[in-house]
Length: 205
Image (cartoon, rainbow, N blue to C red; front, top):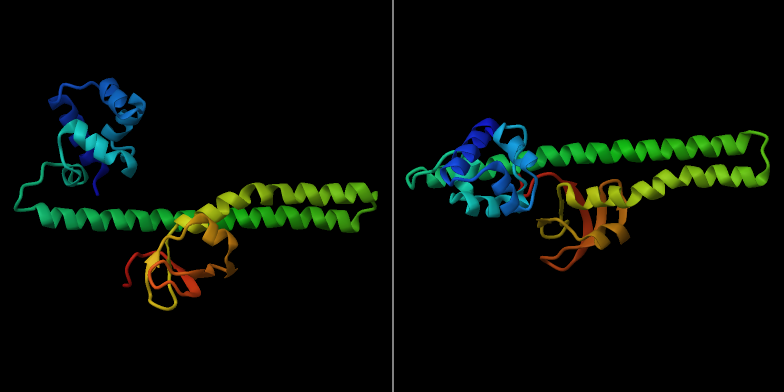
């Protein structure tokens, strides 16, 4: 997916509709700086705003992701390519999120272990030992909701019974037993509980 081409296309469509960056931004409820980033190829419109953007520019989502007005002859081919590109982008983004999850979790555990070690081996008053351990727990407790959110939304879980791949709700991930990235949850499709492995693709390769 060519961000620069898409950015130029957004700028051309905006001008054809006699809209300034500020006017388009007001229609979408965002800043004109975001519009500028799109048009300069530095960022892509978020999926949550794509339909509204396309409506404002009088184009289809397929046109937007192709960076040009798609003819009927090329429509299916372009749509398939755009869907594959979006899936690839999500997969890469999910990989980065899962790496960050491991990194942040590692830092939190390292801080906790370091302060616990200090509290155990240094000559300190009892209240100070407890305080050090509690301070070590703070980063972990603060980061925990965000780490679980990443675990929930990055990638998919594959049901061990029927193979269905899906994104579970937050509470299912929070309260499920787990071993690493494998969790014991109920599949929304077959309704059975099983050990479900984290995968990055929606469909099997």
